[in-house]
Image 1 (cartoon, protein in one colour):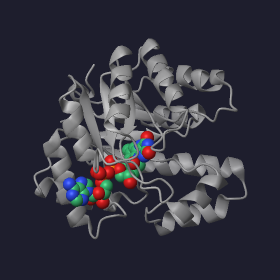
Image 2 (cartoon, rainbow, N blue to C red):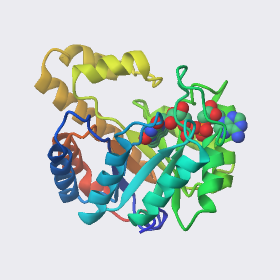
Image 3 (cartoon, protein in one colour):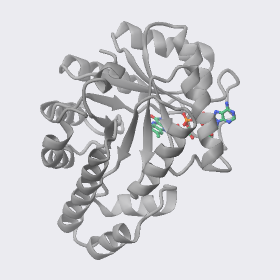
Length: 289
Ligand code: FAD
């Protein structure tokens, strides 16, 4: 099933998972996938390391398991640190497993790993994958601009190149202020980017995530969000419930504004995915006007 077909029918609701560390039992992620299956997402995507991690074989296994469970899988594929031969091998693996959906990415530049020379941008990979078979190809987008870009306008011009290279739809970086997503969407549409754009929503439900948000994530943190995090950071249950409620509020507002889809960064937390899915199922499952 090509994901682009689902956008024609409904507001897409998807999940993202990541391969666990080698020290964690494989059963943990497989149990999580079983729980996510029950929530009937439109697809589940699996992250893939940009740096050639041995966990990438596991990413393929997880995508296969998603398919066996009856869900639609999408495999992320970053290119900057891979040669054309390595990308060929992964595409062959994806084909052999019957996976039809790829999120084509550049990957973060790593000062310790000199980039390989075959693919410079995600758009180069998209052009390449287009010639390799009948894949549904997604790309990433950044409501508050990619950090490598000088401005949102410049980033959107580059995003247009990515769409013209053959991206069927886009998934956004996480954000906490819906107004930044709406401004981005308006500018992207004005620039002639007409493919479906899913909003990336990350429920922040524990203290580690808050710390990571503050230090590494470029997303702006609205006052309301900061107040909630500061008030509840020492109370795990309160923080979890507040983080879920904040994400639900974002989704309700986005759905009311006619968003093409919601991509939930589940952080492999099936409990949180369930709470959010239950809260928004009536909203997500109505036909789009
Ligand atoms: P690109 O689209 O190539 O853009 C990178 C930068 O180059 C931007 O500033 C862009 O404006 C600029 N640019 C693009 N094309 C051109 C051009 N033709 N000329 C000049 N400038 C250009 N990383 C992983 O390693 N694994 C994952 O599984 C993963 N999953 C992700 C999922 C989502 C939904 C998102 C939003 C990101 C994910 N990432 C992942 C992170 C991603 O790899 C990084 O954000 C990376 O730095 C950029 O990737 P990209 O595909 O957006 O790059």
